[in-house]
Length: 288
Image (cartoon, rainbow, N blue to C red; front, side, top):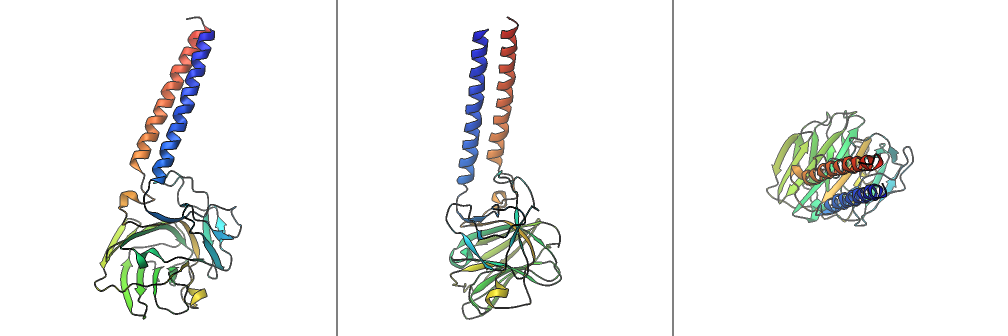
């Protein structure tokens, strides 16, 4: 009987070791998602509280600051866990028309040949224009990208050169008001591709003259320019910037196949070990 109990204890120890190994594998897999510049998950909370800063979860230290107003944490989220990483999603960040956040580094599309922006967004209304990412901290409508929801709900991207020349890049898809939409914007050389709720649109910038601003904002146009036409109002979540042109299989809204397979295999092994251990424990108690 003592021998059976010892074996059962050994099985429990093995199960714990396997569980820790699985956790380490999943953590390393998430960390190995190469090329993350910054990842704003808005998980500081609690819901209803005002954000004091915008935490960068990538570990790269690209924390943002509240520029104006008081963006508030909100318990409405698009999905949990995040399919690509498996991380729980508990909070989003809500912006009113007078709320904005600023980041003290160049927007990656300004400086990198390849880059990707991903985010979920839930606009309050799409009757007017919602300028979500206004990528300058200057006061003029120059030297910036404008990543926006156009009146009527289409997703739009344009930029102005340092001298103010407009380059219209993308306009299409649909971002409905009052519901979450996943958007990925991929820059590969001079080609820009947007994925909006499964709709793909592409444009080639034939004569690039990119902005050179050294900072960018979320919803900052009204504060920096200022302008009253185009403020964003709504929720935003899981903003990730990468220094690669990601494929759709790498997007946050897509399950990561290797980690998912490892997790399922590990869970199956844990169940099998638990059943085997329970069987040995039962047999030792009845003297078999």
